[in-house]
Length: 158
Image (cartoon, rainbow, N blue to C red; front, side, top):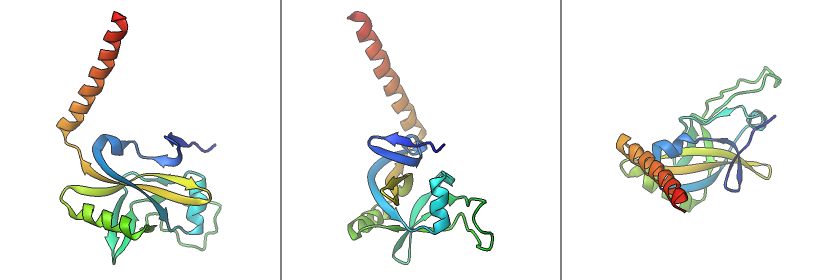
């Protein structure tokens, strides 16, 4: 049975929750993905990992690196599979320029948040992010705990 993750209205094949913990998210972009036939079959069976995957530019084209898709054993053996190959992203010119401008700034990078199906096409959610420091993470946890305790106190007083 294939497990899907829901984030709002989207039904993700795989979703990277660690991005929200480790980074401040500035922009989100949905992009198409150029895949081979065996990769699509593996995606349908959830044999994919997006941990540590990032976006970079080569020869004025946008590629995603470290997107690991494992082949299925039932596919023919005469094809050589490179499950960690770079995959090209399909973006509009405005989105490419936005990514270039952010990546050229110091401290920003582009990472993959999740993979989802849109009709029969596999799409990728890309986020432009800036890294969090340890004290940023502690402050966020402290604010969450305070809001929970505040609601408890208000509930007891009413």
